Image (cartoon, rainbow, N blue to C red; front, top):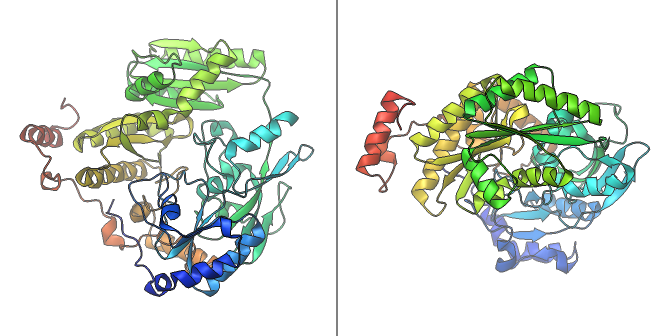
Length: 511
């Protein structure tokens, strides 16, 4: 992964800043426009906090019509726009530019309609993910996609990155639960794709829009599928004496034709940090643990849990513990959902987001551990094991520029590994700036050219979320450079040098 490069700012736009702000005040209420430095600093980064940039200005519209007016103005005045939801992106997808206006949709947070007869909800893009289920629960329904940040992340952001979550093994990710969107084009035109029906007439643009990271238009409303709440559900917590055993168990469960609603993986560092943060009874003596949740009637739950336990015993688990109450279940999931925050209390980290085939899970975990040791970083693995969506958390010191460069190289090798194992660069975090320069590891020139042509059909002037997704440096820059001791900077110590040299020569057996 190369050091961050952003497009050169348009000095013509930055020199017109005062005039642009003045004209924006005519389009939106003054309270929804932020132009002072202190106010803009709130929006200078997203959850990838290693990179920051003050935007030209920030606008918080309250309606689709206001979004349309803002985009039309920016289009006519050739001003770049960075769409933003709650700023929970872990890939720099909402990183602003100094010559761009941040368009934050957090005020557009209404539930427009819950339609239990058609089993759909229509909501504004700034609504939080969890709020859909909260609104639908009184009718006996829920919204399936459930990212760990669901109490904060927005529907629009979920659509932008095609977010998943723990319970998407059974129900699918955002695109599988999206029926329609209202989207504003860069020139201000308001368009509707899909609707309340399962199969809208004409071309299906929803799979193109989901995961497009704000490159094609700004989604202001979404119509999503609601599902009937299950009769019941129960997780089982399984401890193993090795990550390989836990990973092999995951593959065996899926191979047996069992589709739990969730299979979550935690390694030893993650188990200890999360148990300290939320005392949920995680197995502290285990090297790895799985949370396997099944749902259905009482008889179905009992049958499925027995099958899962039988499979797990083939891998010599250190512990098997079924949840015995709703309170116990809530604690087990609270610990898992709080994992990223818990790790953040002890260290800065960069969270990767690669995907691999399940059959490659044991090898992937072994290689990830070796890569992180090579770069002298600790790693905690917490991820959606059922669909192979890995989230290694590489721990480092964000205030150390040498470590920042090294952790990017480390993360880049992990993502390259995912592609080599038959997977891909991203599962639900998006490309953003984090993986932008790695795109050629997965795509050919022809693939990228095709994506660029689609982008230019929707946004010919490249004003929407510039500097994201598409490589800037050119193909030669995508080649991962091998780590060399001369790159490790002044923090290098003789003893560590010897260990790394031995590791590179001898392989995985170095302590």
